[in-house]
Each structure stands twice: as C-alpha cells, then as structure tokens.
Image 1 (tube, helix red, strand yellow):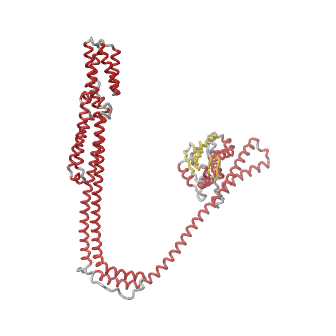
Image 2: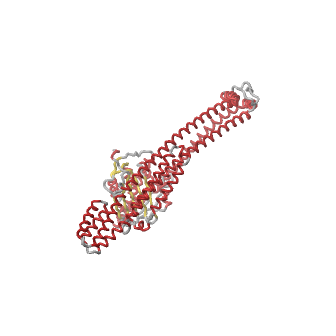
Length: 616
C-alpha cells in the first residue's frame, strides 16, 4: 500500500492527529461514564445518610423513654433536649427524602416511588410519637399531670380521719402498680377503695376524696394502657413496630438501589468496553497502516545492518542498497560511509582489546593475592610479637621471682621468719595459679586458632558449674575478704558445651574478684525464662569508663593488644581470657555484655540458651 506522503515527518504527523482524536473521544466517554457512576454512588450515600438520620431519631426516642419520662423538668417545661433533637432530625429526614425523591438519579435507580412511600411512613411515625409524648404529659410524673392529681388527693386523705393503716395499704398498691405496671395491683387497689368507701359512707369528705382519688388512679391506668404497660403494647408497641418496619424498608430500599446501580454500572462498563474495543481495533488498523509505510524501509535497513553486526562486520562486501528518497535513504548513505571506516579499524581494535582485557585480569588476580598475603602476614607478625611478649613477661616474671626465693631459701632458710615464709608461700601459690591460668588460656587460644577445640553441646547443670567455680576461687575470696552470694534455682539446665561454659564463668568470676576491693562483694544472679538464662556477675570493684568498655567489646584476637589492667592487689593479667570467652560465647549462640561505672563496679551479663527436652 502506498501513501501520497514522501517524507517521514508528514506520515508521523497524520498518525499523531488520528491518535489524538481517538484519545479525546475516549477521554470524553470516560468522563461521562465516571460522572454517571459518581451520581449513583452519591445517591446511595444519601440513602445511607437517611438511614443514619433515622437511627439517630430512634435513639433520641429511646433516650426520651429512658430518661426524660422520669425527669420533672420535662413535665414542668413540656420540652426537653431529646425531643428538640428528634424534631430536627425528623425535619431534616423529611426534607432530604423529598429532595432525593425529585432527583434524576432516583428515577434512574427506580426508587422514587419507594422514597415517596417511605416519606409518608416517616410522617406517620412522627405523628404517632408526638401523640405519645402528649399522652405522657397528660399522664404526668410525681407532682405533675394525672399522677400529680392522684397524689394530691392521697395527701388530702391523709389529713382526714381515715384509718392510716388502710390508707397506707391502698397507697402501697398504687405504688406497686406504678413501679411494676401490673394490673393485678390495680385490681387490689379498687377492691380496697370500695371497702373504704363502704366503711366511711357517712363521712362525706372522705367519700368525696376517695372518689376523686379512685377516678385519678383509673385515668392513670387508662393512660398507661393506651401508652402500653410494656414497650411491646399500646402506642409504644406501635411505634416500635413502625421503627422496625421503617428500618427494614429502608434497608430493602438501599439494597434495591445498590443492585440497580450495580446493573447500570455493569451496562456502562459493557458499553465502555465495547467502545474501547472498537477504538482499540481502529487504533491497531491505523497503527499497522502507518507503521507499515514508515517502518518498512527502516526494517529492511535494520535487518541488513544486523546481519553485518552479527558477522562482526566481516560480511561487508558491497554498499547497502538505497530503496527510498526520504530520510531513510539519506541514513543509508551515511551508514555506508560509516561501515567503510569501521571495516578499516575493527580488526586492530579487537586484537588490542582482547590483549588488554587478559592483562588486566591477570594483574587484578595478582593484586588480590598480594593484598591477602600482606594482611595475613601482618596479623601473624602481630600475634607472634604478642605471644612472645606474654611468655617473656607474664610467664617468665613469676618464675624468676619464684627462682630467687628458692635460691635464698636454699642458701639460708633461717633468714626468714615463720610469718615471712607463710607470706611467701601464699604469694608462690598465687603466682603458680596465675601461671597455670595463663598456660591454660594460651593452650585454649592456640587450640582455638587451629580449630582444634570442638563445640560439643549437651545438657549443662548451671548450678553445678557455678558451685564448682565458687570452690576454685574460694581462696582468692578469703585472701581479699570478699563477700560472695549466689542466687540461682537448682533446676536450671543449659544447652551448651560444658567445658566452654565452665571456662567462661571461671574467667568472669576471676575478673570480678581481681578488680574488687578487699572486703567488697561479688554477687551472681541467674534469671531464666522458657528459652534463655541470664547469668549476671556483679562486683563492687573499680569499674570502667565507656572507652575501656568499648575496647573490651572490640577485642577479638592477639593482633591487637588485649585489654589488661592490674587488680586491686596488683594482680596481673593478659586479657587473653576475655578473647577466648568471647569466642566461646559466640560458638554457644550466646551474648556477653558489660555494664560498668568507674568507682562503683562492673556487671557482666551472659545470656545462654536453656535446655529444651525436644532437643534430646
């Protein structure tokens, strides 16, 4: 198919105008359909608003029965807030119903007739309620209305010569009736009244007052019967039935309107989809026609260029044919010139690129290996220096001191008193214990470095481990006269490696004693829930500032100097035990934290998993 246009610009302009026209048509239809849907939605919302107003009116009605009927202010002023609110709601309900009945959407949804009937029912309901209110005013309460008249006659009878016991019995039946609304009490009332009228037939004043008293009570019972002795009888019963029916009719009307709106929306959707489908088909046809005339020469040129590119420009044997005189033809000429230049330099560029890529890859691998080797060498060198420093200082120092003492003792042991020998014995034992502890730590660290310590979890009796370590540090506690308390339940079991937990607790307890002043206190508390146990070791020692805490928590290996400070009696340490503790805690899936304040002491909290039966 051929077009009268010879340039791509004219073809694109025509296609653009055609699509813009279709777009405006679709937008107009969408807006029209949207407006209709919105109007129907607003109508349904208005119906729901009418229902809300009606429910508010019924709530005011119930409030009137529940509170205002027993409020003397209502009978005195013949008005109350609930009645005022009720009348306003009914007026608003009627006006909005009339307005909605006359709307176009009511006819569209076929609910105008139902709305008119509903409005009439609301008016009848309002009239019946107002009549009930007037009847309530006529009945009265306490000193008002018919009940007030009845009380006046009763008070007048009390001032006569009538037997007070009989009068009180009569009034008791009156009150029982008013409270319970049971006609049986009214029957008893009239029986006693007739008896009194016969008994005092010669006393004209008493007979006259009894007559008026009985008539007032009779009128009261008649009004109650008309109102309804219960909410299901009389006018109140009719009002209740009307409200239930009105609510049901309104719900039915809302459902009907929603179904009709749904049907109309479905029809609008079908119409819109049909129009959109037609527009879509038309767009496809126009797109095909315009794209065919525009892209055919471009596609042919693209296929030829793709073939050349796929062959890595090795198939350039002749220039590309020029098939049109428009912009595509001009583009073909320029491509032919470009291909001739590309063919000259492509082989040299490809060869150079491959060689450079290979050299860069090899160089990158060498750099990575050198970086890793340098880092490992630095770490090993730092570990070596630290390891020999520990051996030469912390291990050799106590041995030299012990050697000097033994030489002096061997030369002339009489130079020492008994007290000095006891003191040297205690110091020697302390030095030997420190060296043993240091050797244990070094051995554990060395095994840990070669991954020789295996994690073997099992059931661990926490109380047993703590008591065992308490016995181990008993001598240190006695030397420094430190008070020790252990608070734990015997039934706590952990799921962990026994030896690792033993090492961790021994190290933490030793540190607490080391940094606690003589006559201080060390407390171990264990708090547990269903899954974990928190072991807290508190001391009243020298404490640490936040810089020292940060340094302790960041200690991971011997390549960085571990944290090591002297104890309160100049006890030495290497800081190696804490590094091992942190690794053991990590292997057991636990958490070790510290909280400290200079001069007040340190609290170490160890969280470990509890033993659960299903693990076994």
